[in-house]
Length: 84
Image 1 (cartoon, rainbow, N blue to C red):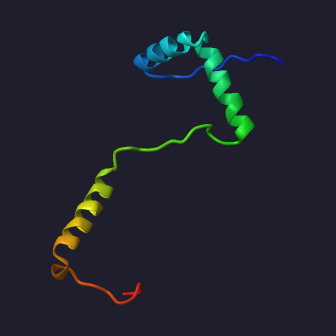
Image 2: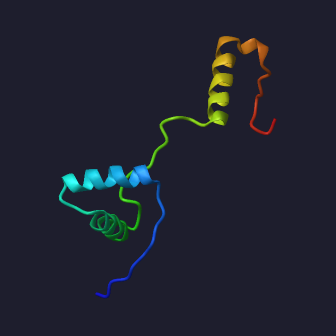
């Protein structure tokens, strides 16, 4: 299989930390990236779950609104069906 060179940009600190981590596994950064790409192709997806632990501002606002509604339901208008 022919090799090609690819340039990627990343934060310098991310690169440094990743190189240290992969070095502990006996891998260089190129090998680790190739492992990721091959596993992605094999599984036809990103081979791990991507989540966001901290909700964004809009979600926090919605959570706060629901909590306020629960505390004082009479202060909010209710609807008998979804169309309203």
